[in-house]
Structure formats: C-alpha cells, structure tokens
Image 1 (cartoon, rainbow, N blue to C red):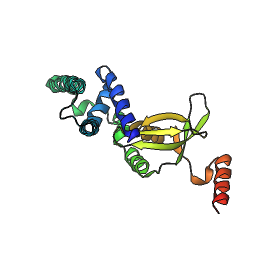
Image 2: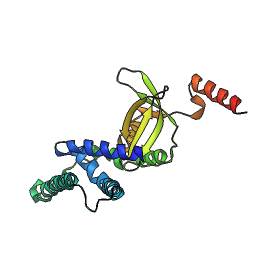
Image 3: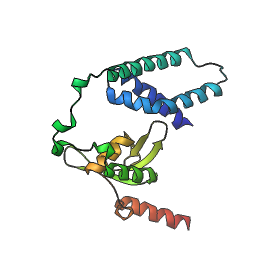
Length: 193
C-alpha cells in the first residue's frame, strides 16, 4: 500500500510536465484511469464523500490539455495528406512500438519475475548490472536496484522494452549472477539447513 501511495504521488508529480511534454501527455492518457482509481480509493479510505478540490482542478487541467490535442489532430486538410503513390516504399519503416520484435519483447517483460537481473549499456561504454526490484501496474514503471540494494533508476515499460529491442539492455541469464550474489545465496542455503 505504501508503494502504491508513493507511485501515485510520483505520477501526479510527473503529470505536471504533461503541459509541455507530448510524450508525458500520452503516458498520462494511458495512466489516468488507474491513477483515478487509486486516488478515489484513497479518498474513500479517508472517509471523504468527495474528491479534494485540488485533485478536481488537476483533472480539469488534464481535460483541457487532452481537448487541445484532439482539436489539433482533427483539422487536417486533404492537400496536407501525403498521397500513397508519392511515398518511397523503401523509406517506410514500422515504428518500433509496432514491430514484431517489440511485441515479443513486451510479452517477455510482462512474464519477467521480480528479482531478475538486467544489464544496461551506459554512454561511457561501461555496463551497469541491476536487479528488477518492483513493478507498478498503475504507472507501468519498473524499479531497478544495484548490487548493494540501492535504488538505481526507474524505467517505464515502453522505454525498457525499446532498450531491449535496440540491444542497449539485456536480461541476464540466471547462471550469470555476480559472484558475490552466488556466494551469499550459498551461505543463506547452508544457514537454513
């Protein structure tokens, strides 16, 4: 429950950038139904019969942004459309989110268990090895920790899958655990016995 509350707070904070960032606005459109459910459950838990005025005002602001987006995409004249015959067939490329690789990787990530290890390529050429510590179905975020148990970073599912498809991230096979982790697991098993 505490993690859920923290993710709701994090989502509301992230939503503040939706006014200027189109990617965050698209994320917000997908996240808003789950976020609403969590806020309403929290309000009901507190015994209030109505949503806080601040949250109602925030939802009204979101609605304004979404309406502005819809109006901007509705008005497209026919001469602005690209005729299919004029498009070079070789330049047509499926967006990464619609590719079969992306969809297959999305299924793999959905089945990946908490505690799985990942490797991420860093800009300086080094590789960072981190463990999947937590996943939020509300915000669709994955939290990773380093080998010392400290929070390394949080990634939305879309970015994680895109990195895996591009090869800048990998799921580490179970037999490739760091030496220290293998040793600690063996000591833990001996102590249990």
